[in-house]
Image 1 (tube, rainbow, N blue to C red):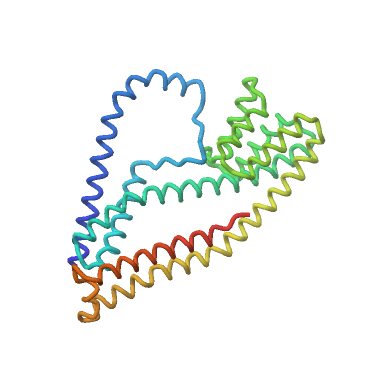
Image 2: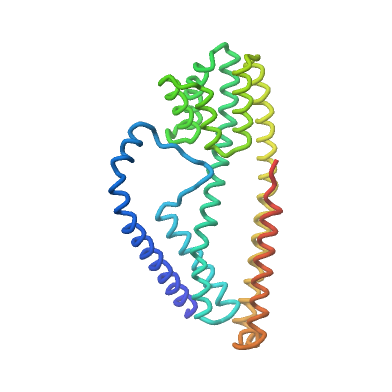
Length: 297
């Protein structure tokens, strides 16, 4: 019961520190925002919001959730390995690092969703071009097709296609619109499609055949990636269990061993050094497993 109370206290203090830091940051930025608010309003009125898929900005709730979950987990790890509330509280400060981990996770998730939606767009584009439609008409047509698959108007690919069509309607070149999309998407598949599309458009080749063949190649690649993710998902779960298993063993031996683990918790002594080495080994194993599971095609 005491460890739960201490963990809640440590998490509460960590959350309070984050709120105070966030409030201080907002106050420091208030002056600069007021002076540049008119310029920002002009920019927003002239162009819609563009998404940079290589960067993900956490909302305030996402930051608080990541910090609290990270602080709670780090506190438990620190207490299990050292049986010292002060050391565990220091470990809970590592919860601030979990915002970076969560940011990367949500960024990769968003890019995966965009890539899967882009695969459906390729099928629709190839069908529209094969039906004899021009490039401009094809991009307008695929928006209608994708809305049947993705009713949500905030779907990434639908927003990007609407932006491309809006730029074309305003007299912009479709090549520059697609190039801008590929630069922001930060995806090899979308970049490859953009390069092929721009090259075929500028050289005057058989656009229908080139787009159809390119769509087939990219779609097959995406299917292979999906199959790999399905096969690896089970191994990821097993690796997480293997990483958490030592924590369960240490907890069981500490609370049910009647002093069996006490020599490892004596300050000063070699025990805390050994436990620190164990944490380092677990961290290194977790990093290696993440690298092994990160298979790219």
